[in-house]
Picture 1 (tube, rainbow, N blue to C red):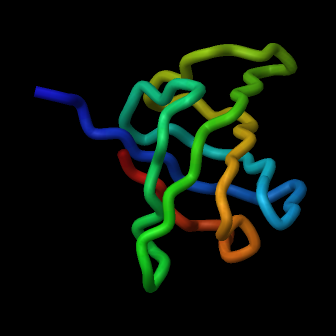
Picture 2: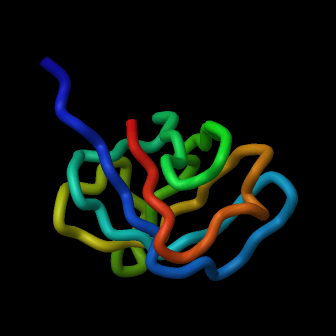
Picture 3: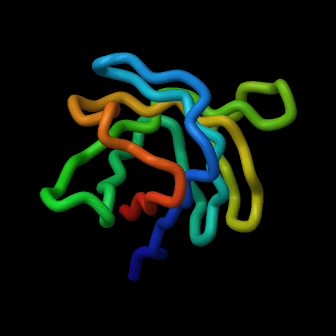
Length: 89
């Protein structure tokens, strides 16, 4: 049985057409670089890849539940992301 994955976007620090740098809180995890997450709060399903995780200034590969970090997401709908959105995997 796989564990549920859930990230909550606290804020968006930078966004381009294909990437978004977000401050997130991991509500259920762990979250790994390279994994694909789906935004559950958008009208249509959109997938985003976790490209990079930065925790207290250090790049890490895994973010465990209850922790917050900066996460670089990649996907075609990054401009649609907002604070409060949830990503699940």
